[in-house]
Length: 175
Image (cartoon, rainbow, N blue to C red; front, side):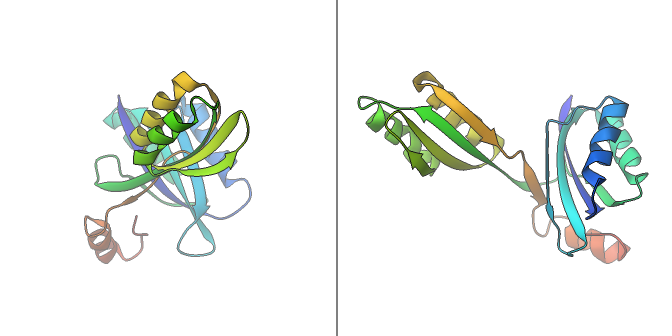
């Protein structure tokens, strides 16, 4: 089972996210993460959906999504060269004795410290999923008190296929 990243352009209307999530649920596909935000046009949104499955399952996901009325375009970008990022807020337990150790752990990750108290510190990290997971792993021995993650958002790298695909079809959105 391979990680699948689907880039989906949808009409920006109430209920679209619920219909997409419902479709995945009905088909027995698990959504590992889903992010939604405004697309290039104000009437559209871009969803980035991460799931796991083989090639047949991925093709089925694409076919089923394209059947939804508010779905404009779907691309499985799992095998493309992509730029992907995730944001996480991590609250870690601190003490006078561990404050410097934790600061040294944070340095190479280029995190932002967004809140500091007497017994805890909250940091913001942005990067690929592996980077976020690595930081959480290093902070775990100190006591991770809370984690809030956005999930993956991704775009196909410039010049890889988006311009060629768009020029050929002229009716579909570049992903």
